[in-house]
Image 1 (spheres, helix red, strand yellow):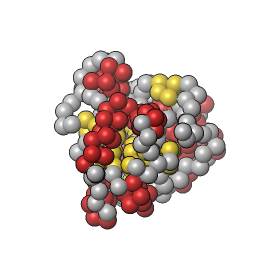
Image 2 (cartoon, one colour; image 1 turned 90 degrees about the horizontal axis):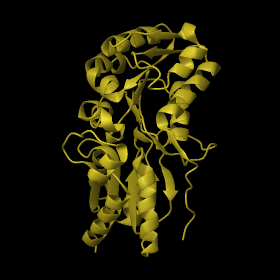
Image 3 (cartoon, helix red, strand yellow; image 1 turned 90 degrees about the vertical axis):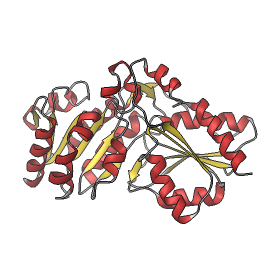
Image 4 (cartoon, rainbow, N blue to C red; image 1 turned 120 degrees about the horizontal axis):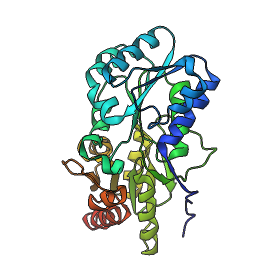
Length: 320
């Protein structure tokens, strides 16, 4: 058996986002934060408490937040705007497209509470379409870290290294925190989390951990699964995807998002053009979420290791 990735304990990715914003703000006085009435819920309160003179609360006016962020960026600041992803990515799409992307402004958009793991907040607050919308916007970079540690590094990198708009997606609930504290976060570079050549599981966000658990079960069954964490959905690491297709011969994608338009679609676009292989998809299948505990919802919609394992067995049969 290969080396297993260890969960250091559950921690919410939103906490990592808040810690990264605080760290980046301490290192660069140009960083400013914009809140939309739920500052503590998305962990921007850490920054607001430390740097109150660089924090602006605009209330429940998300479209206005994007306009203010654009103005601040044009004035030489590095604005970070964060709220629930159903508001930061979906309610504000027009403003993001015209004010930020068209002008290629360096604004970091935090999309919190993404996916069904928001739980009891229900379908209206469960962003399952944000990746699809954000990744088609010209100039937009789309990040989807897999745990709290990576979320912290992602927001620091988005602030320090990017030149244009960035959408950073993260969850609410405490989930396994398992990536290395000293990892190097490289935009557009996939992470190989588990070696294997019988098939590849390409995952993002919370489902990276579930993909690892599925791979460990497959390993017990004599099947070697490569697990690839895609923390940068745009620009996608096409080389890693093509190599996985060539060396593994079959692919399963896993995401807490609609299958249409999300990571699975992005991967299939690359595969169909460069090296077609059998694929299966784990994600939401053209439906809204609902209220329930996070684990209940993940189980109901098959966003877990068990369903990833099942899809892996299915794609291997297709590849015989």
